[in-house]
Amino acid sequence: MRRRMSRARLAATTAVVALLAAFGAAGTVPATAAPLAWSDTAVVASHLVQDQVDGITAEWGNPGPAIPDVVPTPTGPSFTLSFSETGLLGTAVWSEVASSANLAGYTFVFAGNVLTVTAPSSATPLASASVTVKVTDGHAVGFATVNEAANGSSQISLTLSDDLVQLNPASPFNNNTGGTVDFAPVPSAGVTTALGNAPAGVGLVGGVLSGTTAIPGLYKEVAVSASDAAGARAADTVEILVEGLPVFTPRPHTFGGHVISVSNNDALIGWNYGPGVHCALTRTFGYGFSDSGSPHSGFTCYNPLKSQDQPDGDVGYWTGLAAGHGYDIQIIPAGTNRQPLPDAQTGWIYIHTTK
Image (tube, rainbow, N blue to C red):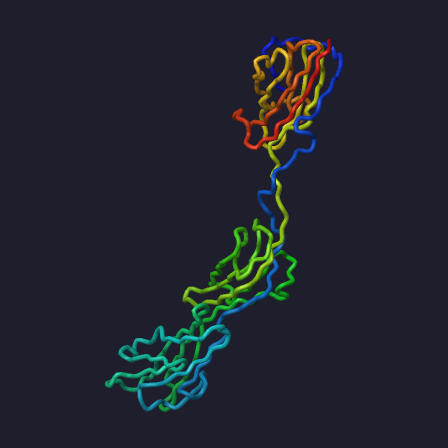
């Protein structure tokens, strides 16, 4: 260990005469500051409200045969499609969003869920066509495409394909023990999930909701959504209970302060460093060292080439002390730059020389 030299000359160590009162710098169990962070152990969800398009169906006409089907070729180029959906919480609003190139010049008018496609006056019956529609309640979104294709000279083939995104939380939903809640987006590929109205420290990755550093508590109206590149979307709300434990950050401190030896004019003291402490500012109060009210100050720093009897600690050698007097040595934790550490816990060692 590096030895600290007081303002008096460095003297040879004398035989131990007496070991007088001393107490550990900062004690053996350092106090801790208030919890600054939390370590979450689980997120438990309940009160699920789902808003998504579970399915879309269509009819050729209003009413008419359900699609898919094979129907007689229409006598004119205009046609009507009727749609319905399941799953939306709010009022469904339908709109046409795309059509095949050969329907350029046609008009598309929705009346509720019924789409009327009207041809221009010069149009003739089409061998094939396609129309894509969108349904939304302002939160969830789904798409459906109806394809018409000639099937012989007197029939057309009607098919329907949809683009839907869904969230399907694993069951049991409100009794999870793994610390996470899996919303299981469908499809599992090509879907982006997003989180809203959640506390800091709760995240959503790939549809899995988990907590890291959120403050434990009950949080309502947490929003979980999933969408694909085309814009199909599912939107859930849920109530979550975050469970966790406080993480205590110990204040910088020294500990194990003690007198090693003492005589009538010098003393050897030692102490240990807590995490993050590399040096100590020592301030000596007592006769001959603080006559003007200001203590004598100096630094000692942890030496990696420490002796085996002082693990992770330091030793200071005070000499030039007055016989029969008491001295208080304040130990202030400092960093590698020899600057006192913020919020550090100061320790004290008391020595009393012999007469």
